[in-house]
Figure 1: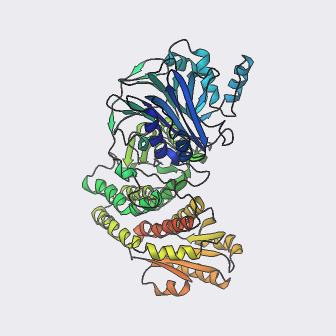
Figure 2: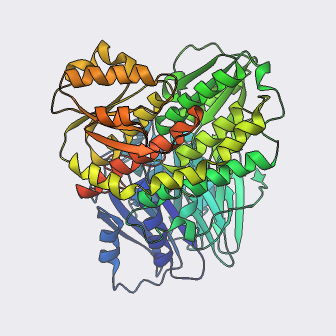
Figure 3: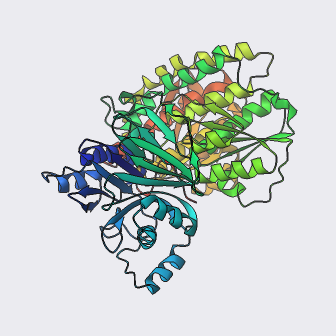
Length: 592
C-alpha cells in the first residue's frame, strides 16, 4: 500500500524523488506528490492520477532543493483527490509528512486537535501526524517525533521534514515497511527497495518501533525510548537492470518469461547445499501453512507435497482468518508463513502470534531483511529478484520450488526427486514458446464476462490461481473450483455462454476429470482443455486446447500455471487495461 521516498544529499532532490516514485507506482497510483525545502520554505506539489501527472506539473520549475520527501497514494481514508494526496502539512506550512498505513485512532486525535483550534484540510488520517508534530515541535524534529509516536495507534510508516531544519528527515516504522539507503554524501528512505536501486544497493531495513534521523552525512537509528540502535548494512543482491522492463511491454509479461530463471536460481540453492533446516520436519505434530492471496495457493500445493512425502498432518489457512480464530498452537507445531514481500500484515502478525504460543516459525520470502524474515526462527528464500507487477507470477513458481524442495528433503528418493525438479526450467521455456498461440486463444475469449476454472488434486490450486490472475488484471469474473465439487453448485452456471478452463494433466485423477468434462459438455458448456500435448482424448473433448510437455505428476503445476498467467495477461492487454497496476490493488498489503 502506498509508496514513500525520501532524499537528503547534494543532488536535486526532485529528480531523485520522481524516479523513486515511478518505481513505487505499483504500490499506489491514486495520486502522488512531493515536498521540498526550497529557499527556506516547504514547497508542495501533488496531483491526482499517475506519477506522469505530477511530472508534467513540475516540468520546467527551477527547483534546486537537495532535500525532499515524496509519496504515491493508494487511498484508504478519503477519496482520491488533490486535497487528500500526500504530502500533508501543518497549519504553518513548515512541517510536511508522507505516510503509509492506517492511524486507527485518528478520529479521536483529530477531535482533540480541533479542540485546540487546529484546522484540518483533508479527510485523511495522515494529517493528524503533521499537526501533532507541529504541536510538540520546539526546535528539534526528532524530539517532536518521539513525543508524537506514543499517541498513534495502528500500523504505519511515515517520513517528516521541516523548513526550520533544512538538513534532516525523520522516518518512523511501525508495522509498515521502511528501509534506509546508504549513499556517498547522500542518504535515502523508501518503503521498498526498488525505489532506491538506481542510487544505492546498501540498505538498512528498519524494524517496528524504530526511528531514523537521516542527514546528508549520517544515519542515526533509535528506539521509541530514545536509545540509539546499531544495525548492519545489507547489500541487496539485485541490480537496477533486473528491475527494468527489458524490452517487454509490461513488467508482468517480463516476469512471466523470467520464471525459468527464477525457478532455476531458487532450485540451485537447495540442490547445491543440504541446508534446508537444522531439524527433522517429521518431529513436529503438524505443519500449519499461513499465507494470503497467491501465496495461499502456493501453500495449498505445498500441503499436498508435504502430506505425501512427510506423512504428517499439514493444514493451510488464510493468515487473515488465523489471526482471529481460536486455533490451538503449541511447541509441537511448525508454522510456515509465506509472503513474497515479507511485509504482508496478516501473515506477519499471524506468524508472530504462533511464535508467541511456542510454535517454530519458518518464513518463505523473496526479500532478504524484510520484517517476516527478521521475526521468524528460520527463513527460506526464493531467488526471484524484484517483482514489480502487482499480480504475482515468478514469485509464485519460486515459492513452489522451495516448498517442493522442503517436502522431499527427508525422502530416501530426495536426489532423484530433486533431479526431476532441476529439469523444470527447460520445460518451462518450452511452455513459454507457445505464447503466441495462447495469445490468439486469449483474444477469442476476451469479450466474456464470466469464466470457470476447474482442476482436481494438484490442479485445484492452479485453478484457483488461474482464476485469480484473470480477476486481478482483466476484471472478468472468474471462479476456481475443485472439479469434483462442480456438481455441488457450480454446474448450475454452465451453459453455452460459460467458458470452462479445465486443467487436466495425466495424473491420478485424470479419468475423474474427464468425467467432469463430460458433464460440462452435456450441458453445452465450452471447454478449454489444458493438458499434455499428445493427449488426443482431451483434445477431442475440448473446443480449444493448450498443450504442455508431459511431466512427472508432482511437478505439473509448474507448467500448467504458465499458460493461465499468459491467458490472463493477453486478455487484459487486449482490453487496454493497466496490467502492472490493476485497479484497487497494491503489491504489498500492509494493512488489514
